[in-house]
Image 1 (cartoon, rainbow, N blue to C red):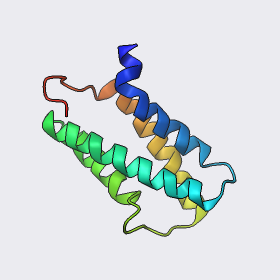
Image 2: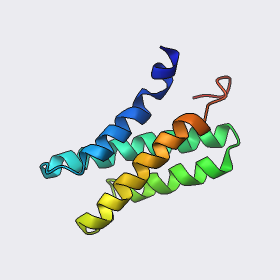
Image 3: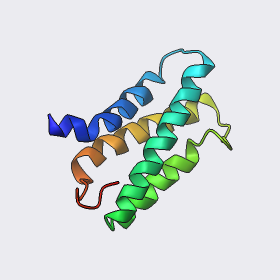
Image 4: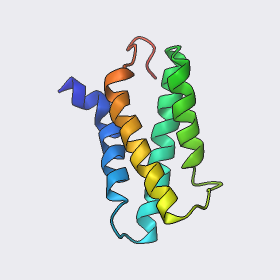
Length: 105
């Protein structure tokens, strides 16, 4: 249960990213941007606090790419590539990037 408690938002982002391959209203993709940016910046900060530089950069770049404030406008095919890539990165991060719980936010 603690594993799910620690990784629920990563799993949620994976599902949201995979769901983006469907045909949804624009509001779904706006929600995807907000959720992904928030989770990515949180993970970037957690990686920074745990001195995991490579994960800090990975999640910061994802957060910038999906930020809803100053959005990037790309073609649907390009977004599908990024959605799949982010889902894979988040999946890998579940097993490769574990928090040092003493330094977690």
